[in-house]
Image (cartoon, rainbow, N blue to C red; front, top):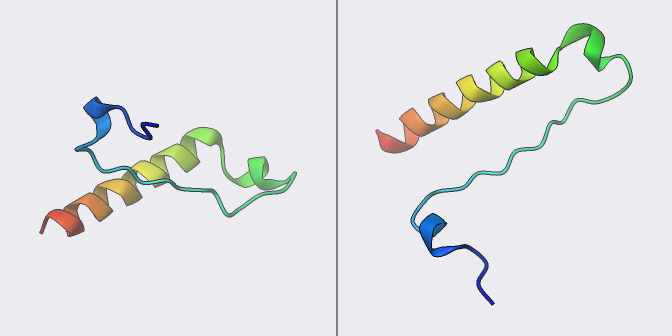
Length: 51
């Protein structure tokens, strides 16, 4: 059984889960805002790992 396809075998993968939730979350954070924050966090993490 192959877990990862060969084309992905040499890439790093990181799984994230949003820890905030609830019916009122959308009042404070849109999907776009959460996505932007996650992208910023991932870029910072990548920079730190590659240093």
